[in-house]
Image (cartoon, rainbow, N blue to C red; front, side):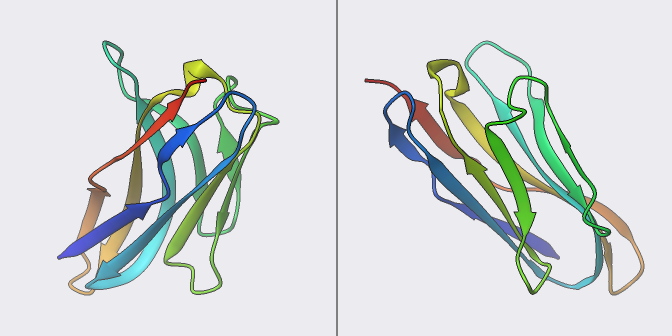
Length: 120
């Protein structure tokens, strides 16, 4: 099994910053990519940012220039640094990982979600 544990959500004022963390653990052979998605009330889940094993990154247009995704030295941790936060960034943020297990199975794994609320 593979698990993702997220942390770092919370309440922040508009213009503020937050850093989300996600650590992958379990029977992992390799991690192909990790990313962050978000789902606001009444809306579909959308990709915020993603990073591949080769450190290529991609961002949603709505967050470009305000958000940075990065991986830790151990490569099983991903961070999402969010700056200049806006009320419309309010959502539950989910970590996602696409991995090959030790048994060479491909899995797409989701974290439990962490709530980010941007409000004054």
